[in-house]
Length: 422
Image (cartoon, rainbow, N blue to C red; front, top):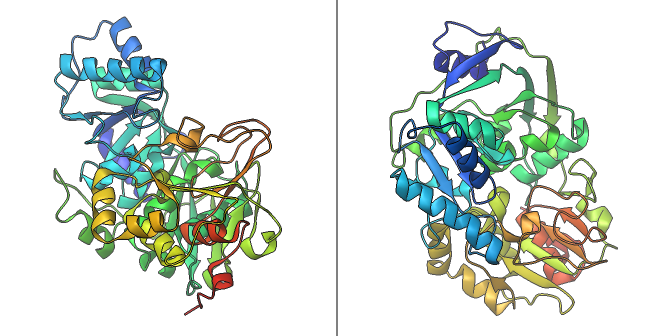
């Protein structure tokens, strides 16, 4: 079996499972946010549930429209707060203690290798970077799982992606996944488990792995997953709040498809409107002027992302025609970025630094686009109207390209600022 099949089999109390099989499986963690939890709460009450299956395994994280942007957002966040108090949830994260959910939960050691995790948010697939099976589901499935601790699944087919070769300077996990989505398309892995492996992945730091698995859903994937190794072990060693298990794929596992990529040939990559699969090398887009740059999100708001952006922008100013919005993904990341002087670098460059929030990524707040405006963001989606007006445009890139572009006033690369390749 593949790693995905082994995790699902273990949680379904079966010796083995195979693609296409319908199973009922125990979940290790259920999560929802301020947009999706209110629906789950309503359904939970409709079915007459007396309580949650485990008050330490249900996570509510207000991060999309929080800090509350208007009355409706405040009402939704209030529902989470009151439900959490009523059912004594230990994993409710109020503003000031919260972060963007898919950055916060790994950081806090609340998702661990071998887990089966469901969340009412499509980017729940992020946690596959730790060697867990993790996927987004609807709010009604979350309601059921909150009551029973179980959820139904159709075992997905697995698709293997092998990456080899040395990465070029500034090229990272975001470029690898954008390149992959550009190759297979937004439905190229529809309802499949995307398993990332190869020498390049084995050398990839955890923050870059989290970025790759985060965007598996942009290729239609049911999940993204990386077999855990020494890097995984080092990451979870002092974080994990409970026991974990490393699973791996058998050598004779069946994959519906296998693709290989020579990473030395993968350039800094940008996804153009209005699909994550509409990718082009960043250097080819030098004529694209921009109005806004967003550095943050569950895809690229981690400390290493901020360090990369700060390295590019240090001592420079944001172009007078551009707004640069920097959003550390969690309070802990915010605090460490402050200690390291990264926030000084951004503010000296005339950027604005926000409290942790999903905010602009989904067109929520903290950076909405007007008609005709164009943004370059380190976020994960660029569909029509994703960041605001339906006649605005969103381009996607890694933090280094985003920072360089903020200075240039157009899409560009760090080399244009005199930052050399190593």
